[in-house]
Length: 466
Image 1 (tube, helix red, strand yellow):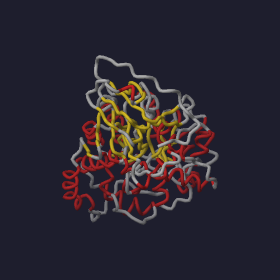
Image 2 (cartoon, one colour):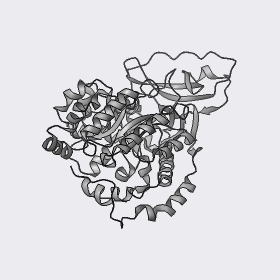
Image 3 (cartoon, rainbow, N blue to C red):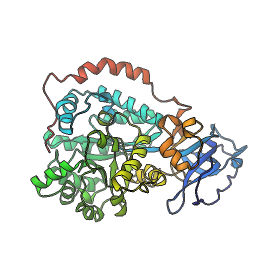
């Protein structure tokens, strides 16, 4: 595989032998690397040396010959990428995959999803999270930002399966102050758990389901406790127009006047972000990011998409996401990467936006920044946590390789991921999951589905009215 790149990174250093064996050596692969200007390049016949869950060096395959290691992976014919990050999802909703199809947003929520979610038990959430984590690991996702209910169960699954996650307990104002308090208690209880792989956020659902007073209180709690906020805002243009009519401000304007933009905030979707919102986001004093999940927007036939270029122009990172599988039908960030590039080309009317290299940048550096892990993951470089995936490009659908970036974004598939590694721990090797038992989860979830999907009771957890 010869990359068509004039952006050649600096020469790889030689790995000096040490007496203590490395924990893991991945050798013979092509490694995606970033230079000091965040430009993407590829190093062929390279090796990654991992010690104590951290990337110790990225060097040549020859340099690690004879270097002792507890585990070695021969990755010839494969590309090593930073692990993909799902910047916004509702992992347990895989249990509702395909349940609400071909419906407008309002009917999707009110007639199916929110009535069904009123049946959720903690065991349903746990099983959904197990299935979701298995799906993501197999698709090369090493980290996800989750926003849902009964999140203690999700945290337990993350701790067990070895993934990295930003987790938030969602709440609506209709739950009373107890909902907001539970969100804070969860965030404080689980922050830094799972050997540091779990970070937490406060998770108000959205400006249309959470009052200004609750948003302002949440912003204050976030500042007091050093927590980020993860919520839906300006999901679509209808929400923005309704917010202007009812509140005299766009959803982004509501976030500014309630102080949420003074916190570190991750905004899901943002397809309803307007030109007038851009100055508000640009001057936000906290770390502001947006997660885009284009497949769902296409499926709901929303007329606009996340304004990726405009956001990047004002310095707001845009990470890649899937949303929940109830709307997206999959947790495949690989597909999100390709669709983000294609939808932006279509929306901009310019085939030069987004390029394959820009799409890879959103999938790696931008996604890591979006979830607050910019200094931890998102690059294969010394000092970063060893979250990486190996992609097999020997299949007929990926050959020949003229432009490696284009092959990765537009030809490769999530099923081409052979190995997934988090913190130096191998979670999947040669397509075999090592930390989750999928058949057992599928059997039990199938037994529970009739009770979970019953809508005869006529209840719903919330009303969608925007």
